[in-house]
Amino acid sequence: MKWLSDRVVDRLQVSLQLPDFSGTRYRAVRYLGRGGMGTVWLAEDTVLNRQVALKVLDPANDSGELASRLLREARVLACLQHPGIVPVHDAGTLSDGRVFYCMKYVEGQRLDQYLRNIRTLPERLALLQRLAEPLAFAHSKGIIHRDLKPENVMIGSFGEVLVMDWGVAKVKKAVRPEAGTEAHGDSRSDLSIGLSETAHGRILGTPGYMSPEQARGDTDSIGERTDIFSLGAILAFILAGGGPEELDRSRPLQPVPRPLRAICAKAMAPDPATRYASVQELSSDVAKYLGGLPVTAYRESAFERASRVFARHRVAIVLVGAYLLMRLLFILFSRP
Image (cartoon, rainbow, N blue to C red; front, side, top):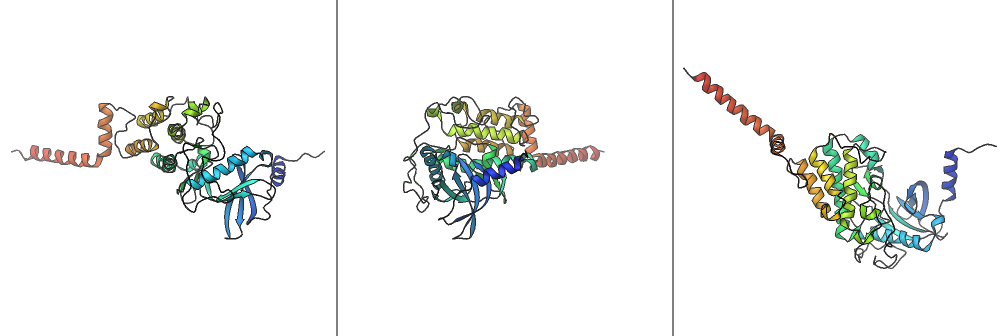
């Protein structure tokens, strides 16, 4: 008996899951990967002659609840018109009964992969600041991501930072897409209609990045500070060096400066009330650190304050010191 290799088995599984795009404007090009409740395919939009990404519900998951959840994810994306969030173009049902939605195809790398080539601390912190922008926008719309992690952040080919996979997002209030952005295939654009909120006690998220309230299944406590915890965990991952392995929380973040460790600690505080109140506050503290200013999360000593001021104004201090030294030497040597 001849055994099939893992690669051949994987290829056969993908072929068996190939969606039936007949009767649609899309033609499958190749399999891209998994995304939450289904598979993601690179496809050609035969009407507009462009490449798009299609997220299709798995055959085994073709239940009413999961189909509603996938369409709900499409409606969430339709509400979030931001450069840091992948736009949705279309949604509907294939001839084989599977639900799908169409979104922009983004070429790039996941954050955990991209970090391997980013060595300087300012560049890494700049990534976090750009990640905070679409997250703050979503919060302003009453939408909580609930599954932020490096694998759900994409860095595009031009350096753009995009937040992906909104399949378990929590909608805190009824939100409607902006005019002209409704997803096709479902006339109900109000996110308060459709799939009900996650039942109390159900755990959604990724270990290591989910907040304590998520781990307890306390859905009533889920809010902006839940995503702030996850953003703090991503910051810790960035500061630890990135890479494919999970960050070991017990490992000290040396030689990371103490103010940055304090920012992580505040963002990831067990009690949501003691975390940053908003994503903007966390991002502002990171910006202050980069600008040589004191951060709100860390109380520095007098020596640390003097060191920070010297580092920020080093050129001016050196010039003034050199001027005073030359004046002193001039006075000493000009005496008769």
